[in-house]
Length: 104
Image 1 (tube, helix red, strand yellow):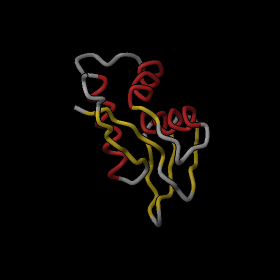
Image 2 (image 1 turned 90 degrees about the vertical axis):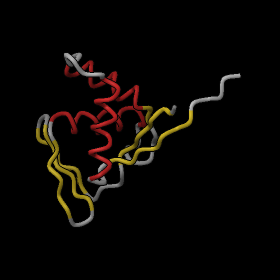
Image 3 (image 1 turned 180 degrees about the vertical axis):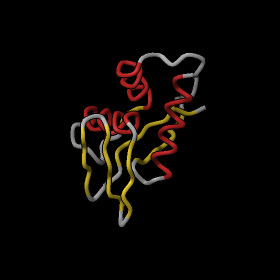
Image 4 (image 1 turned 45 degrees about the horizontal axis):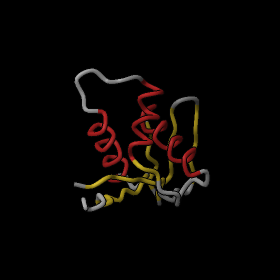
């Protein structure tokens, strides 16, 4: 089993309009939902320096639950992992599974 961590990928530009935003990744513009925008804000707030600082996915989950509330009928950790995977596929974030410490 592994823990997941994420960081905002280097983007050419990040335009924020209220709760929505768009990022320029290479030559592509990716329009982000309120949820995805919140993820980037959480990653920036936790690392303080934007791209480059790793944040544990549990911190992202806690921030999303605080912002949007507990989703009914969903595992919040699995939902966060899915959002991070979607953003990673768009090259907006980078993810890194971390091995759990060995039981000893």
